[in-house]
Image 1 (cartoon, rainbow, N blue to C red):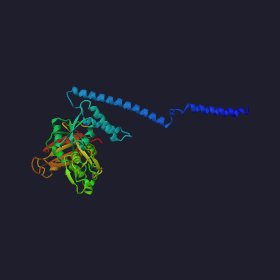
Image 2: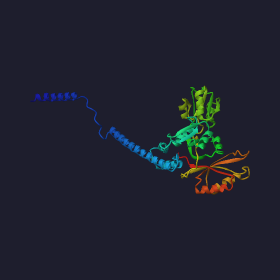
Image 3: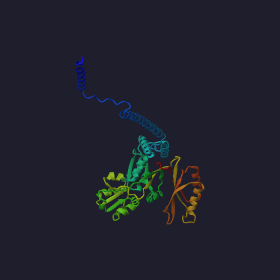
Amino acid sequence: MATGSPRRARAARRSGSAAASAAGTPKPQTAPPDTPSASLESVRRRIDAVDERIQELLSERARLAQLVGISKHREGRLVDFYRPEREAEVLRRVKERNKGPLRDEELLRLFREIMSACLAQQEPLKVAFLGPEGTFTQTAVLAHFGHSVRALPLPSVDEVFREVESGSVDFGVVAIENSTEGMVINTLDRFLTSPVKICGEVELRIHQHLMGRMGSLREVERVCSHQQALAQCRGWLDEHLPDAERVPVASNAEGARRARDEKGSAAIAGQTAAEVYGLAVLASEIEDRADNTTRFFVLGRKLLAPSGNDRTTLLLSVGHTDAPGALFRLLEPLARHRVSMTRIESRPSQRRKWDYVFFIDIEGHAEDRHVARALAALKKRASLVRVLGSYPRAVT
């Protein structure tokens, strides 16, 4: 017994090893609930459930938007579904509710696209802009209206105004001023004769890039761009391309088209233009000021109701603008009724030489009580008082 016991023990061990080998490599087992992989899988399942709820809510929102459209159609209005003042209220509430981790601008972009897609169920908005494709104005259209609109490029600002006036498009978008170079004069002057109304504003951070088909800056013979873009990059051009010809063109995208087609031509434009025209970016963010921003007007055919946080643009004049105190007489009612003025610009009136009109931006809506009182006082002393628009301030 004593000599047999060790042999039996060794035999038992060999038998166990053989059995394990016969079984092969054990199959992977599901990780216990407290392991990292199990925790990740649980989070993914929760994400899937949240996605389902989001999709259900989006479908519900779209159905409600359909009901709004049906209601308006029964009232006899065909394409009157877009309400800029209502949209501004929605976006402001989005910012107020936001507790993170998403940034305000990310949530605003998401909700703009949601509203754009819901609205497009009825009839996609037609929005004209200064083309060709790839301009900053096109970027402003998509930033304001979302991607579910029909964005129509036109060759000039004049044509954008005319298409809105005629009703061929629902809205237009035009640049009005840049934080570095000031007013866009041809846009401003168009308001002297056009009946269009300002329905909104867009503020767009502008990054300018030098682009072309050449391999280095040494090959750049000329730089083509809108004169505003050339001016915004004047310092960089003076330092890096002092001998290159600067060629003003109708738009940055037109400059990019020339850079694609002409040997030795480069362009200053946005990243979108480089992608559209197949150009290499030779230098990035060459604007002279880090806070370079352009403001755009949304053009429509009627005045809007108050949104609660509005701005009003006025066109004013007096009989003789060269008379002593003429400008004071126009501004005094604003001060007296505590209306804040944020911008003033003078332009030739086109009535006679050395006669001027004034474009003025004020805080508030024309229907606000203190603004209405100031406007009533203005009408008693001005030869011209036109409300070009009362519109929601840009939500950024």
